[in-house]
Image (cartoon, rainbow, N blue to C red; front, side, top):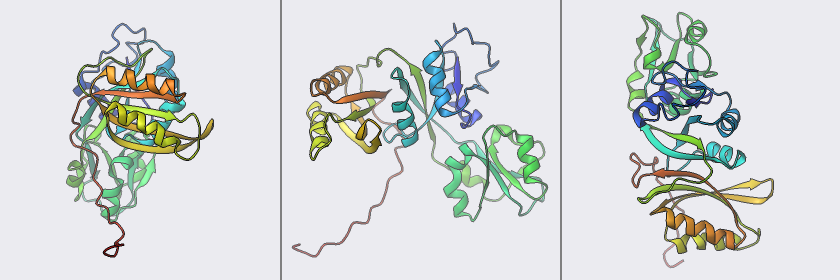
Length: 300
């Protein structure tokens, strides 16, 4: 059985499950009939923390979660995973073409633009670039309620499969369809990370045993010695000590990961493997940044 959080787009989560072949991942589950058709809808598991807790406690239940990108994880997901049950791990990833459209009643002009949390996450920069200031509603808000909020002059941003009867796309809607694909992952509860012989993307959270000058350097030296391709590094304050560090790297085989965590254990470094995502090239990649560095005088 598959579920999703209440803040996730029902259509996109179901599309991810369908495209990746995750539907039916737990056909023997006692809750397998809770949703009639996983190709169009997944079980609503509540908030993100509720979703993680439910997956950790119910056998044969997995969840479809928004990743950010396999090489550059969503900070919110990283933090939720590390704060959740130690059995939780993301084990697969898939990119889904966005289904967002901007629609209104024929002839409507002006008015407010109603959009939910998932739509805002995926489309806010583009909408605001067009001068739109959307009205945010919870993702659980029904389409009928959104229509009522928009009124005769307003519009809504919604998945194409949920467009109200008779509504039409407004100018600018086509730009939403041109967005980069959205990455989703399969969240499971497992006693150990999956075994893999081909390269996989690994998310590893670490907490250096001592917080002092150079402590992170010693931990990163373990990653360097293992020969992994580090692509993401982020720090965050920890309730159990000054800092935890989130990493994402390409790992050639499970033997390398086993050896790496054994070395961390030997050094007294706390760690959690948050994701093992099979694959060596996740296209499209993260949106690149064009940095502008400080100029230095010649010879400085």
